[in-house]
Amino acid sequence: MPSLLHEPPAAGSATASRATLWVLCLGFFMICLDATIVTVAVPDIRQSLGASLDAAVWVTSAYALCYAVPLVLAGRLGDRYGPRRMLLTGLAVFVLASLACALAPTTGVLIAGRAVQGLGAALVGPQTMALIVHLFPAEQRGRALGVWGAVGGAAMAAGAVVGGLLVAWTGWRGIFLVNLPIGTAGWIAVQRLLPERRPGTGGRLDPWGIALSGLGLAALLFGVQSGEAYDWGTVAGPVTIPSVLVFAALCLGVFLWSQWRNTAQPLLPLRLFRHRDFSAGAAGVAALGLAMGGLFLPLMLYLQSGLGYSPFAAGAATVPMFVLASLCARTAGTWSATTSPRALAAAGFLLLTAGTGALTWLLHPSVALGLLMLPLLAAGIGIGLASAPLAGIATRGLDPSLVGAASGVFNTSRQLGGAFGTAVTGALLQAHFGATATSATRAALAFPVAALLLGLVCCAFVRPSAGPRTARNGTGSRRGPAPALPGVRPDGEAPRAVAEGGGAHAQGCLPRTPPAPPNG
Figure 1 (cartoon, one colour):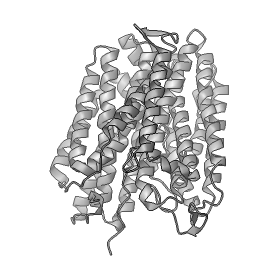
Figure 2 (cartoon, rainbow, N blue to C red):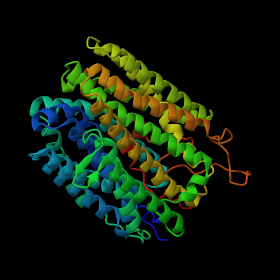
Figure 3 (tube, rainbow, N blue to C red):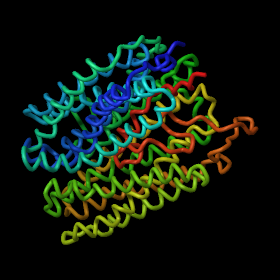
Figure 4 (spheres, one colour):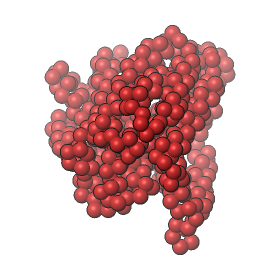
């Protein structure tokens, strides 16, 4: 099957290469910024629009869900129609949706705008990395991917601070208006600087699979997140929360059956889950996404509504954690070459569990912000240690023909984990709405702790023999180094953005097609 990624990269000056890289990083920066910038603004959105807690949580969940579900499809659209064209389309959709969010008169319009933003981000993310892989030769590609990952990590860390400043200066609408100049500049730069590339075939799109998975996941998210708001009863007319959950189960059941029947080009290749390491790695990264998605919403709400800190102070409190996570991810990537990745991931989950548990225990109306930062720093180390090895674990021993599909499933697992983590903690906050802010937040933070314990269990299922240098195939015989996810170096080190808290968005931007081997 012809693919963009197998064409030789276009030659150009070093200056042109740098300009191309920064143009691609600009779009990536924007969608990663939105991963954290909105969470800081949730209290202001509630006050300004008179939104319920359930509706305010949907402002973050709608984006995460609509970003996660189309990721694999977006990669195939890039293969079929060309990544440059899809990148331009995604940037345009994202900018227009940001304008709609900024002008939203009601919470419903804001949620709809955020959903469209997520669709635009799903188109942008995979194309930025696919174009880097395509345009840069093998000897420059690693450094370019490192810059790409660092930009994503910086955006995740900056989102909390920038969001806090914008909310303080302009109100919550400013966090969406800031996307207009960034996205417009990115669109113009892509139009002028990036070359058009010949599209490939991209394979069959499986519209029924896309529709069934999208409907099923959306219904499941709605039932989980909004069940408490409707007292687990009637939504409208004959529609009830239990019927919504039954509908979700039917859609997802039919989807899995259709994927089992589709042996040619399934959207979700179920044969991947025959590989123990992939199953453990994908489940582990989903647990990490659940925990990160479930941590930041109650934390930001408590710091602002419970302790009275400004949006800027609340956002700034998380920056050291993001920075430490980034540094530790690089170290963990290096250690993966000589140390058991299972042990590294388990150590990360242990530290993250301890940090989140200590944070929950320290919550008190008179607690100092500096004291809360100590468990957040421990959590940052845990994020870094767990994130990098999981990507390598998931593809050890896989046949090279499955690596592209594994990338898509792995990335989507973390994205969906983040969306459902936010949904579950939102439901827990609503269930304890009549209690004090401290007790409600403690109840909500119990879920991330449980998710992290699940991640520890997943580490126990990783094969001890799945070291960084050799892996066993399905018959038990040894072979050479297993292929890694696109953007993950052979030593197991992922791009820096993979390590960031709430970093589903950065991780979700890995392309579904592995990089082509260097010519010659």
